[in-house]
Length: 334
Length: 231
Image 1: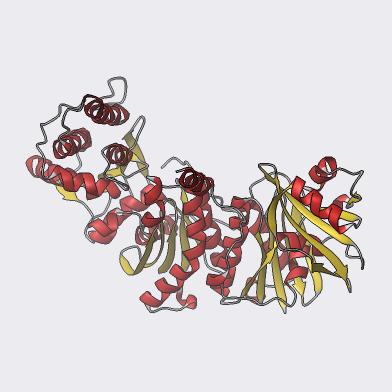
Image 2 (image 1 turned 180 degrees about the vertical axis):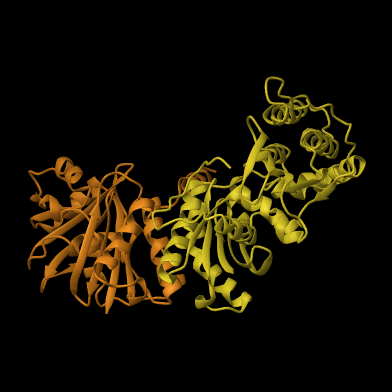
């Protein structure tokens, strides 16, 4: 089954062709980073405009890359939630019209489910159940993946996403946007104990819930304090300390959950999974605990269409299709 | 030639099917529900009732702006999706021109199409009617009602006001200096009927070349430019 899949929930427009949920025939991405850079973050209206301009060209390129024609498409899938509403709307409305015109099923896919499914593309042997930490610019959640379509959120951030914490910190440190990579690069030259940052803790209720806004504020305060007093700011040290603190928060909860649920497989997904400190810490933690770690290659960590096509296959198997009245949603439970 | 016309630039969404110049079906919904939910099902149901399939569509026409940014993008994304999947061309028409085509097209009438653009402005274009068809007197533009008033006074004609900005103009314009009439309500706002009529004889393009015409930058771009000008 060949699925043409679209992703447009934030600042990448993507179209992909995926066969049977596991084989990527084409994965075309147009990144809008250059359009948003000067604003220091994603501007929703600019994102939505850009998606509309390029989406059909990406669909052309996806078919061309896959070496198939329109008649070979068995279903059309799209991210329908969560995301920047104006951006998601473009992908949803293009996809459902294409499905209607082609006379094939339309499969709505939750963006985070797509990130989790990126692991199926990278690791053919991986099958549910497993535990997955989904970390991106907009979402941070620990998910019990019981089956391909039955998932429970064990814990989540109470405020900012981990990626948001990196982006805002990078901004105040003058590292530009998006912040993940420059912070990661800079952290490699720094002492990860240079700054004693607050451990993001949520002490009431769910032990798997997280918090990153206090950490972000601490970084902002350190930078502002240095500016005001003229004291030198150890930027590499701050970046390294930030990466360590975020990583400790994520890894400790994930490993505790894997232990509690008795899972031998631990997966990480989403753009923040590209962070080298987080990857390294997960590797050693899983090794020590005797668990198998799955982290997709960098290209599949960021937003892409292939992950949507992968998850769409399993959603289709479970009967999750939609009609031409499919709407887009800014927020949606997993 | 079967044309599917879509309109979603403002509060109401509508779809129409034309066989050449004859309108076969028309559907409109103005209940405040998002166009993302209502527009495509309207088109799908109309085709079904006509005994046609989506694959029978030769051309998709859509209003390309000005209008609500999100509303426009819903219609344009659907037109692009249909056009792309069917490998059939698409036509983007000016929302204001579609409004004129859907209005009282009696020869000699002067039509002033206006949408409320907020910020003290209207999206506007002026037309006259010849041979039952609107003929453009101005390009589409975003202007203040004051500027529009000066222009209407200078042209010394009685004007029929169309669009969701018609009442705003009627209430704001100095009617001691310019003669204006509000078009009857059913003829006043843009619809897929007007889009389909305005698309007749226009060149269709591949889906990838269909672009919106917002007539206004995003707020972030405006504020950035204003800041740069100050510096």
